[in-house]
Length: 249
Image (cartoon, rainbow, N blue to C red; front, side):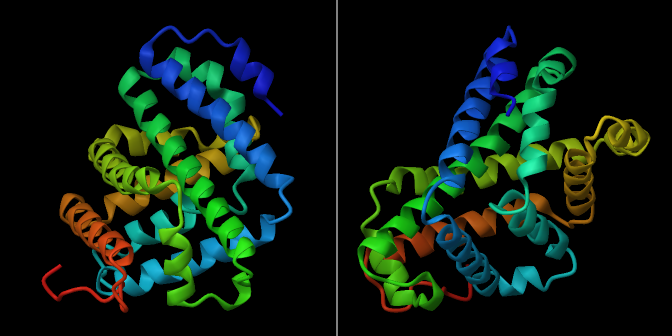
């Protein structure tokens, strides 16, 4: 919807150009995905993986110091459905973002967009692999999931996905420690509503609140990354219970 605006905006820094290209890539992918015959399957794949993540990291998910952060990760950063307005709004305000925001914030937005794009691309690839193997996404099992996972041609992207989670988490953690950001979000609520940017503002507010409530973000991220890297190795090595991890991880 706003592709022309993205293309026409002059991006004067490397950070702005990176965000611009990622927004264009994500915009085009969203159009492709919306018209894909396996669209509904991607939602079921995402739901299955979200539940798997909750189960793998149940101790962290139930921890009062980490719960809100993980909930934000699973429902906002990893949320292929229901975020169309938010994503359209990011496209719409891009010309103002590159004018008003410093490069470090543009880099953070770029990493968020890249994480969302890679995640949804990987979900679509799995949906296609399940379809090719005659596996219904209504009845996924660990064995079937792992078989399709090992057939992926995007394993490098899967590794990058884990790295991006760490990068984005650490960047967001730096910003939420600045109380000025919370004040700005509070003050900008009414203008956001007037500009029809409520979805985008709510997303930023939820992220700020979730990370502010966490005890030790760096410790959480380190544990998530270590565990998910081990899960990936387990799947690729054909372990029968790839999501069962040692107690010390």
